[in-house]
Image (tube, rainbow, N blue to C red; front, top):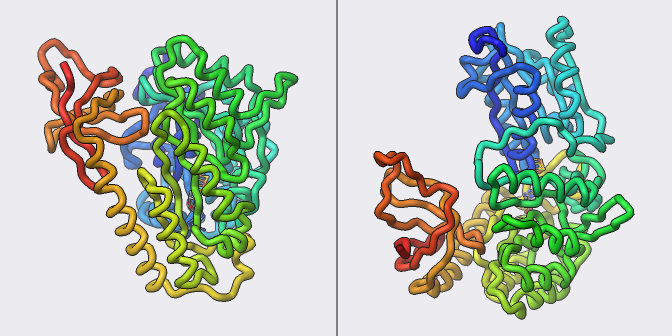
Length: 447
Ligand code: 5AD
Ligand code: SF4
């Protein structure tokens, strides 16, 4: 065992989605496997890693802001830019931030140890930008911080070509992992004490087992639901075009499969959906919503919306607001359209002012808020099973999530840091809901 003080130290900061968060877990595991130790601040580190997101311009700018903060101060540090901005910008990052030494996209993380060896051997600039990284799933080490909830990648990349989106470029074409490998990792996770697994992919619905088993996504979900000891299975993210009724049926039949589905719609106007190249109409999307509404279980539905896509008229935007009324989403992520490099939407000319986009964003958010207030109030009096995530010192309440992924804060006689050293974290408890707000539920543990 190496002495801690002589070990090389790394700091990592992660931007973006759950895929990126999980990728960072793989990177942390890989770095630890090569003899690096993680430290909590960049100041203490020899190697500073930024795992980046380029979904919107703002996300991309963040990493360059971080890199500039260190420009002069840190001559002795090695900087690495990995993830989606790395894949998108490639060697251009060296021009914009000459103190960066390593640039790697997500398909190359299994080669990080070799890249580090090259750096240590005196190479000033190392890249990993190939996109045919079949083995990206099979990184030998993964370091998960949460001991109860785990992410598990089932499919990498995306074969769609939504007109606004960089992901097909930053994460490459779709590659599904074999069901045997997915189920094996899931069983190991359960043996290690995890009770909740979130299956990850840019489009999990187009999962197709490459082995002779040939399972589709719904069948994989059913197999996941049969694993002994697993309490909750989630998945994200879904694409309406590939979302089939069998997925709803699987969720309906098996309580281990959480009754929450994130099904991004992006717009309520068929004309805008068409220009976005989403491959479904408003009516086709609503049919999928009907499947969920007609299920026996109370399936929570959430979505993503982009406002201000080029050419979105006031009438198109109004269709989005009407769609929110019809669906009654449990939660919504709304974004202003942001122009991204190399995307098909750049060809459109009728771009909207930032001010108008801002107005529409605020309107859509307020509209959704008004929907959530009564819907959350309807939970009052219900008893919900939550997995406990932690304790909020400011409110002196515990925090947990129900199967629908709603956060519930609640009181419980057990305080954290108690004398017995007992913790509620990771436990499943029943909570009676007594309070609600536009984005939250509150209550007390049923003892
Ligand atoms: N501008 C704004 N929002 C975007 N999203 C993806 N690309 C863009 C873009 N160029 C949003 C979509 C997607 C979510 C992850 O981010 O709503 O579902
Ligand atoms: Fe950001 Fe998309 Fe990359 Fe996730 S996949 S980090 S959301 S650009």
